Structures are given as structure tokens and as C-alpha cells.
Length: 61
Image (cartoon, rainbow, N blue to C red):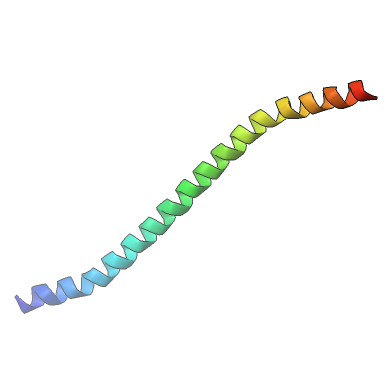
């Protein structure tokens, strides 16, 4: 039984570090995905705003 607890005590730190790494990578990947989605939405919305401003500027001249 002592061997069992020694093995468990040896595995817990590795599992903990692996879990922290997985959580950090998950957070990074989700943040990247959300940023790319926001940039995509912004790029699709930008041409409408730019065209609207260009028309207003050209008619003012």
C-alpha cells in the first residue's frame, strides 16, 4: 500500500502541471478565436462606414 501512495504522490504534481498547462492553452486559444471573430466582424462593418464617409466627403467638395 505504501508503493501505491508513493506512485500517487509522484503523479499528482505532473497531473497538476498538465492541468494548468491545458487550462492556459485553452484560455489562449479561446482568446485568439474571439479576437479573430471580432476582427472579422469589424472588417465586415468597416467598408460600409468607410464608403459612407467617402460619399459624404466627396459631396462636400
